[in-house]
Image 1: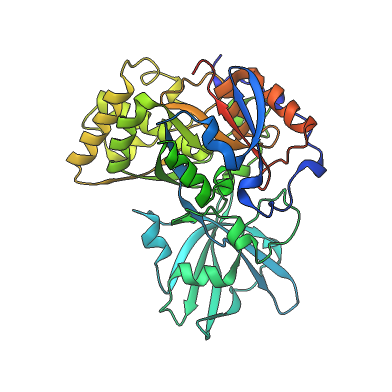
Image 2: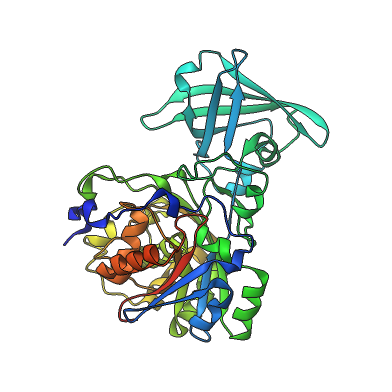
Length: 412
């Protein structure tokens, strides 16, 4: 069956509010860990995760960093307008240049209370390094699904990264029904986060600590880092009854040629991903490489993976090994004189998807009827129901601040 024809009702389950983790545990690595391998379920805690991974395997992390994307502006009347920065509006070459912009920047945003915004601009006073900064928000354009907002500040000698860090709030997901607190700035961030740009955390990585990394090293488990900047679309519910009616969100990936080389070297040992975002990134690399294999002269922008194309000709019918695909991608990037691949992927991984690289995944427990749950089902089939039933009946905590699982791909 083509994933377009999947019924989202087949990926529903009952999630009581009390099972949703509102706060993280005091210690990151004490969260419960469900292990699923060869249709057998067992339990442990994250601290011991190295014991459940193959020796010399390769573990891929997403090192994106969450920005304080939610900015509240209070009008003179007392009404509050919330601007949630989704992604840069202008065409970009990398996120670092956007985050380092000074004076002004334009972002695609969601706006809470947009109907109350009658003024030419909203204004907010913040303090950076003991200096008073005036931040202004101007409504530029209404899009079909969002707004374009220009954020400008005076004096303009501070970067947007500094401005948003002082003006914004940690963008906790909508199902955590409380205000962000000071502690969230640290806990809704992995300890290895490095590249600013996400408006939601890749939550599988929130459980990892320095002690875990030490235990991985002792077992000769290699680690590598990619960057996928997580958009708010990761929480976008599937509202259509059939998946064909759902538009998958596109997200920016940023991967070095050095990582791709290491990925090729580690494929024989087994590749495991921390989080659905890491899975989407490395699986996208295969298909992008396949495009360069089929057409070495392909335009760079055409490397982007669209929602359904991996399930359809010509990609579906092409015969190319993982090594050849990734080597082709490396050669293509070398011919472009670049050591980085910065491009969007809109890939949807759903039941029927042929995994090319990923042997297993570490991930949290996801919302009913979500594309994230579809990805889990793609990896282990209908047994996702057994896992979720087990987690619900054994006091596992769900969603972003909750517990998680290590699942091996069927027949891996």
